[in-house]
Image 1: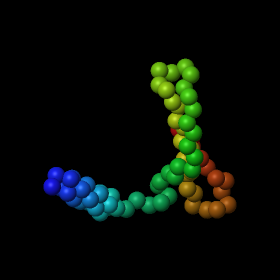
Image 2: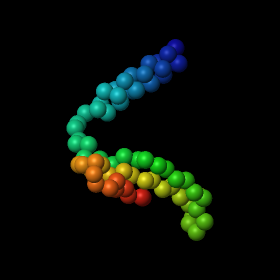
Image 3: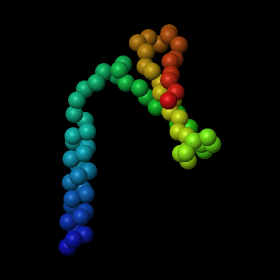
Image 4: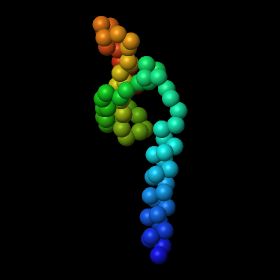
Amino acid sequence: MKTQTKWRNAILFLLMSFVLGGCGFKDIDKRFFVVSIGVDAAKASSKKYLVSLKFAVPGASKESPSQYQIV
């Protein structure tokens, strides 16, 4: 009986997250897109890994060179 309640709650949570996740509108020109992810072992830091993300910056025209930002 308890497992049925857990599954029902999990399914309800997933359905609610899908419904509420699409609220709001943001223009595509104001967003970044992750095009690559790099994971390296950190040598000079107290953390174990160094994660790098390469974001593509969308442009208005196709003739402009592609812009990106690495974080």
